[in-house]
Image (cartoon, rainbow, N blue to C red; front, side, top):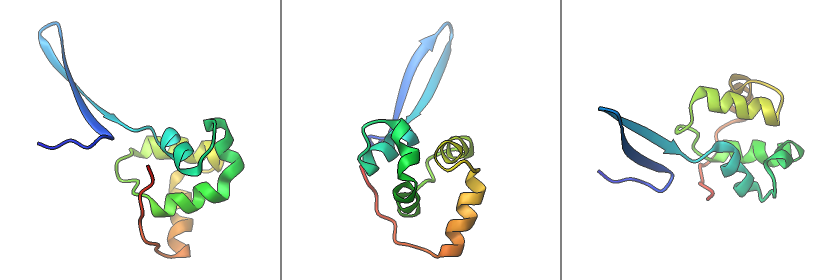
Length: 98
């Protein structure tokens, strides 16, 4: 099984049960790095840039809750609304940022 850097699996024992945690890169941190912000709190100031990056990166690795939280923080609306508006704008090539 191969693991990418943004999806690491940690195994540890707690009592008699084996717990498995899947750790994914936080969307807030990822977008902060993509945009080049110093702080996560700067993201709402760069709404246009965030909007454009969201159309180009793969969001499949994030849960609906994570996407909702992110969109509500940055845009003030739910993810399904963002997705619907982006679908109306058309499809863009996906290109990952680090």
